[in-house]
Length: 451
Image (cartoon, rainbow, N blue to C red; front, side, top):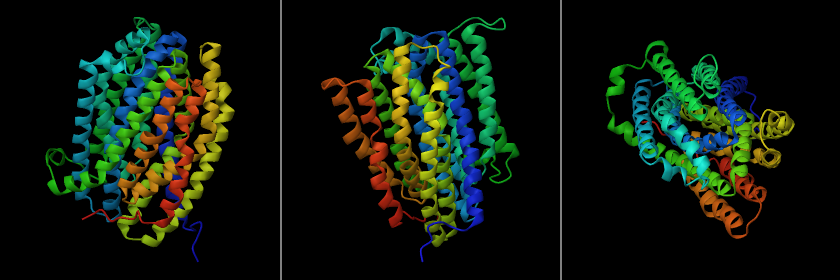
C-alpha cells in the first residue's frame, strides 16, 4: 500500500532543520531589504521608488546567480548521496567561475548604460535620477554577490547550511548600521540619502564574500576546497553541468526578466504603484522565507536520495513533502494577513500608497498558498530529482504566453486599475498547481545525473 506520509524520522529531522535554517537565512537577507525600504521611505518617497527600480535589476542578477547555484546544488547533492567528493570540488569551481562571469556582465550593462536600463522600468525622471545615483555605486557589489551566493548554494548541496545564516547576519548588521549612518548623516557621517544606502550595501557585500571564501578554503571539512581546484577545469563535468544547469539558469533568467517586466508594467502606472509594489514585494519576501526554504530543502533531500539510488524513498518523501508544502502555504497566507497593518505602520508614506500596498498584500495572502505548493514541488522535488527542463518550459508558457501579455493588455489597452493588473500578474501561482500535481505524482522526473 502506498504511504501518504513517510514514517522515517530522519527525513523529518533533515527536512525541518534544513528548512528552518534556510528560512532564517532568507529572513535575514530579506530583512536587509526591508530595513533599506523603511529607512529610504522615511527619508523620501522618491528615494524609495528609486531604490525599488534598482532592486529589480538586483533581483534579475539574483535569479541568474541562483540559477547557477541551483545547478551546482543538483549535481553536488547527487554526488554527495554517492559520497564522492572529488567531483564536488570541480563542480564548485565551475559554479564560481560562472558566477563571476554573470556579475561582470551585469555590471558592464548597468555601469555603461544606466539611464536606458532604468528607463525600461519607469518614465518618471525624478525616480530615474535617484535610481541612477544609487546604481552607480551598488553595481560594484554584483561581483561579490555572485561569488558569495554561488558558494553558499554549493555548500547547501553537501548539507552545509549554517554558514549562510552567519554570512547573512553579518551582512544585516553591517548594512543597517552603515545605512543609518550615511542615509541620515549620523555619527558625524555626511548625509548622502540614497547614495548612502548604496555604500552600505557595497561594503556589506564585500565583507560577506570575505567570510564565505575563508570558510570554504580554510574552515570547511567536507569539500576541502583548494586554490588548485578553482584553477582547474574539468570538461566532462562542465558538460554535465551545462546539461543540467542550462535549463535552470534559463528558467531563473526568464523568471527574473519577467519580474522586471512586471515591475515595469506597474511602474508605468505611476510612482504610487511603484512604491506600493515595492512594499508588498518586500513584506511578501519576508513572510515566504519558509516556503522558499522548504523548496531548497526538498531539492537537496531529493537529489541526495536519488544519488543514493533509493527510489522507493524518493517517491515516499515526495508525497510527504507535498502535504507539508500545502500546510506551509496556508500558514504563510494567514501570517501575511495578520502582520499587514503593523508592517505598513512602519512606513512614512501617503495614504494612497498605503491603501494600494494593503490591497496588493491581500492578493498575495491568497496566491501564496499556490506559490508554496507549486513552487516547492516543481523547483524543489522535480528539479532536485533531475528534471530541470520541465520547470523551464512550464514557467515560460505561463509567464510569457499568458500572464505578461494579459497584464499588459489590462494595463495599457483596457486601462484597468493597478489592483486588477496585480491580480493578473499573480494568477499563475494558482494555475500552476494544476500542472504541478500530476507532474510530481507520476514520478517521471527521477533522473540519475552522476557519472
